[in-house]
Figure: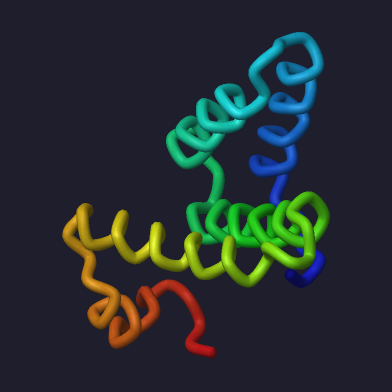
Length: 105
């Protein structure tokens, strides 16, 4: 992920770190922080990038090497299932053009 400054995302990360330090359930705090990110003013595209980066970092740093491929495949399947349950088919997502206010890559 390129180095860019997203103050709203940085603020949410700091808030999550402070909250996690004083609580016993960091996963719950992370889920709550994620649910507040976009309504709190964070760029939704930056939030998605942070989530992907965090997912990869967690996989590489905390899952044993011999299980990483299996877990990565399960994550991909889970994402596809959740997208489908939300009315977004995987094929639609691959064909969709970028939003008009974002540069095409």
